Length: 321
Image (cartoon, rainbow, N blue to C red; front, side, top):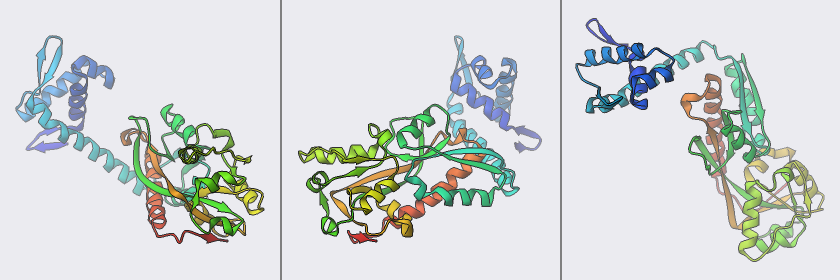
């Protein structure tokens, strides 16, 4: 509430004003807010009296905003946003976040975030239930569009204007083999398509962004990508590669995060030309997120920033375990 010696501008007046500005009439604004039309128009009139300015002029059955209305708009938006942030900050400090939050995450991304994100959230807000769901980025984006998820870590770019990206990371695709001779140099499309290959995400091979990138690389050099073996999980692909049955490809960040859990005897090298993919924390507009989901997004974004910085370190081009 903004006051000047007794009179006051309220957040409710700002809300009625902005909704009227958006919908072009008191009747439509009242329907959107769930109030009676006279209540909305009275709130706007009180705001005009306090400001000593006309905000709308009647034209036919509608309303036309004045210059004063357009000047007021960003300040009204900022006031409502600040009030919402204040409420969320106090609730967070008091540990009042409750309920269940479902965060989308594709399979390999469990190694990027996974347990660390769960630990971050439960440490700060033990009353919240958290579910990490999903298999592939294509599935996650579909669930976001249908409203089944509020936020997810997914492959970019997006083809949906109604979704936002909070933070991005970039990872490099590398060729993985039990044969060190095959990874002494960056791996070309010829090598990629000349040796038996095992690829994960068999259920999503038509939509999987990694598969598309590999297929396009082969196609650009007159080759065809034909995996000898296809499995569901990338851990299985690494096991097959470790036994020397076929080579595979994987994101460098996931290999680094696996650490000692990586099957022994594997070597890897970048592709030639290099292949990178961008991932991001994708979500519905911030104003539509629940407090619990907003907190998970913030924690996940912090984790992604740290991982992104680690992956930005120079790579020797060949690693072995």
